[in-house]
Image (tube, rainbow, N blue to C red; front, side, top):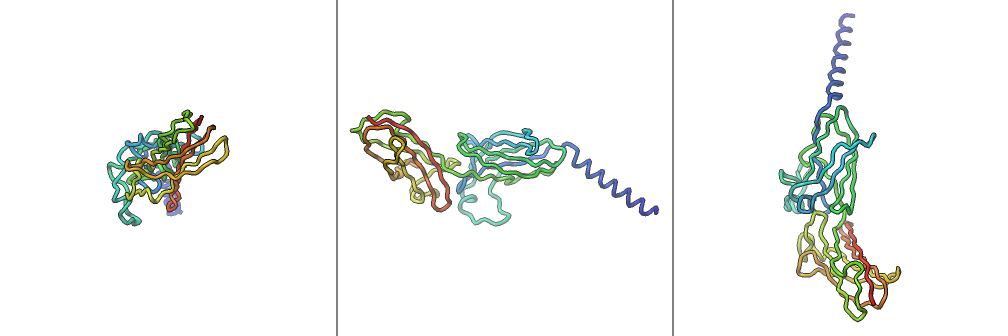
Amino acid sequence: MKYIKQIGNLVICAILLLSSEFFQAQETSVMIRVKAKDAKFIGTSMGGAKVIVRDERTGKLLAEGFTEGSTGNTDVIMKNPKTRASKLSDENTAGFLAKLNIEKPVFVNVEAFAPGDRVKSTTQLWVIPGKDIIGDGLVIEMPGFIIDILSPQTHQSIGANKEIEIKANIVMMCGCPITKGGIWDADQYEVKAVISKDGKPEKTLDLVVLEQASTFFGKVNLLPGNYEILVYAFDPVSGNTGLDQTNIIVK
C-alpha cells in the first residue's frame, strides 16, 4: 500500500512538473521565411514580405513584421541537389523571427503577403512553449510573378495612327531577373498581352524579352475605342502565373 502511494505521488509530481512547464509563459521563437515559387527568398531588396501571426482560436495578434535579409544562395537554392536534411538558408537569408510569449501550446495562423500585397499565402501550425522553430524554420511558398506594365500608361490617350508599344517589367516574386538563357529563362515562359475593346477580346500579342533583363516588349495598332490590356506570364513547367492590367483610350 505504501509502495502504491509512493508511485501515486510520483505521478502527481510528474503531472505538476509538466503543467508548470506548459503553463509558464515563455518566449518562443519561430523563424518564418517566405520563398518565391521556383525562385529564392523574399527579402530586403523587395521591401520584404509582410508576416502576421495570430492565435487561430481567438484571433489574437501574436507577432507581425517583414522578412529582412538577402534572397539567399543561388547555388544552394536553385542548383544543388536537395536531400532531406539539407538547408536552404544561412545566417544572411531573409526571414522574420516571430517571438511569441505563450504559456501553453497555441495553434497559430501565419499569413504572408507578397510585396505590394499582390498575393497572400497562409499556413497553420502548433507552437509549443519553449520549443523554438529556427534554422530554415517555417518556409511559406509564395506563387506568382511580379508584373508591372510600363507602357502604355493607365488611361493614356493614343492616336489611332500611332503604333502602340506594350512594355512590361516581369520578375520572380523575390525580384530575381528573367533573362534569355538565364536561370529564370525567358524562353521558358509564355508572356502575352490580351487586348479587349469595350469588354470584348480583340487581339492577343506575344511579348518578347529585350536585352534589358526582365523587360518584355511588343507593338500593336488599334482602331479607335476604349481598351483594356492584360499582360500575363505563365510557366508551363512549374505552373507559376502572374498578371497586370491597364486601360487606354485610342482616338
